[in-house]
Amino acid sequence: MKCRFDHENRRTQGWRRSLKIFLPALFLLSFLATFLLNNFHPAIAQLPRQEIRGVWLTNNDIDILRERTKVQEAVSQLRQLNFNTVYPVIWNSGYVMYPSAIAQRTGIQPFVLRGTDGHDILADLINQAHRHGLLAIPWFEFGFMAPPTSELALNHPEWFTQKRDGSQTSISAAGEVMWLNPFHPQVQQFISSLVLEAITQYDADGIQFDDHMSLPHEFGYDKYTVALYTQETKNPPPSNPQDQAWMRWRADKITAFMVQLNQAVKARKPNAIFSVSPNYYNFAYKFQLQDWLNWVRLNIVDELIVQVYRPKLQSFIEKISLPEMQEAQQKIPTGVGIMAGLRNNPVSIQQIKAQVRAAQERGLGAVFFYYESLWEHNSESVAERQNGLQSLFFSPALRARTP
Image (cartoon, rainbow, N blue to C red; front, side):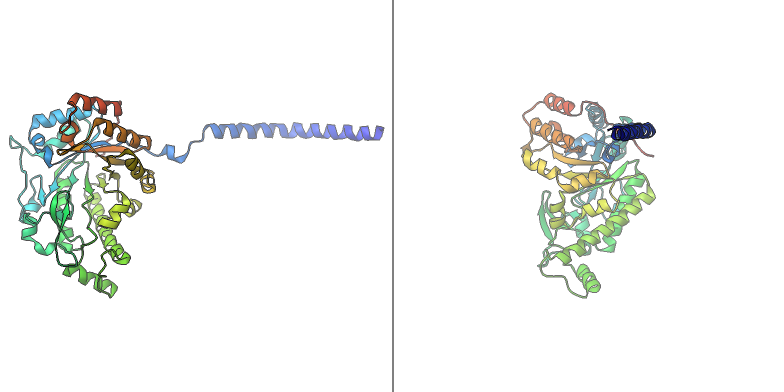
């Protein structure tokens, strides 16, 4: 018994000596673990967040844009409602909305040259926006699209592409339109020159391209493109416009042009925001050959606003919850284009509020189409609409300008 007791005693004394040795180390490990857990933050929380709160200013807003006092009132009101970005149209229906030497040399007269007192309406809007702390990003609305009656189409028919049956028009929200050939070097030069002129001539914070910086998949059967495709692939274009290889070839060509355009913009104005406002990805690629997700991955997009014009909330939420939206917002400020109403199709402030809140819950900004319809063409008072927006944007979210 005594022998076993001595053995147990020695074992206990050994355990105590070991505890004395290891206890400080165990305490240190526990302290470090607690410190690390309390101070750990996921990488996503450390990403810079810029909540975009914007509105597009369209041709329907020209009556406001041409009046200095109306512009001042509009921008002041947007600032009071805690908006932070305006997107004024500068390219629409084959015409520019500012005095353009490039357009005139191409045989295109400006659609609107001056305001009511002879002033430059784009310069005035940009100055007023900056005075009130808003970014101003001109919107290159029509991209490669132009009406068949435009001077551009009439003076440069060789710049336009066609379908396999030889027809040259399609029906869009803007009516019947033709499509500039995005693969033609003269078209690329023309578009690039207009963009560079605009960002150089004005103190703009960037430039935005929307879903029309693309090509409907039926097009691309003009002589120039057929020859280029045949030269590069040793085969004529497939008769099926949705042939996967043929679609990929055209989409990649548009992507290559956008890379070049981004480089040209950045060379001229390094801090310019290269903004893109497409449709949701599956539609954009399949029907418009616009591979904008690849543009994001190639780091040529500084800001993404995906147009999601859906009246039903469930459909809206499905589109803004797609994986490509989540991927984009890990890299760049990302928002949703929300329909504020049309002259023949009003949208209630309740629908607007529900969609903005759904976007905000997912870390997404909101841009409204368009300024006039925020207040007009519905049965609600302006005060009701303003109060609704104020409840959504209850605190400022200023976006810093970069010189």
